[in-house]
Length: 109
Image (tube, rainbow, N blue to C red):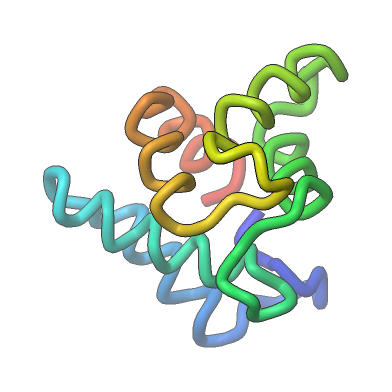
C-alpha cells in the first residue's frame, strides 16, 4: 500500500506517509495523514485522483471489494460527478469511511 511505485522499498515520501498514518492524533492528524496519502496516490501530480488511481488504492486495501462495491464507492467519492476526485472530495469521503484507516494499517504497515 505505501510502496506506491511498487519498487519493493519505501522512499522518503512513502515512509513519511506511513509514519503519519501510524501516529495520527485526532482529526488534525488524520487529515494530515490523508493529505500525504492523497499526494502519494496522485501519480500524475494534477491534484486529483482518477477512477483508476482510486480503484488501485481501494482494491489494495480491500481485496474482496466487488466491482459493484467499487462503483458505489467511486460515485460517492466523486461527489461533483466530474470523473475525478480532488483533495476536498477525498477528505470528505475518508471522513465518511473512517473504518478504512485501520484496514490500511493492519494490511500494509
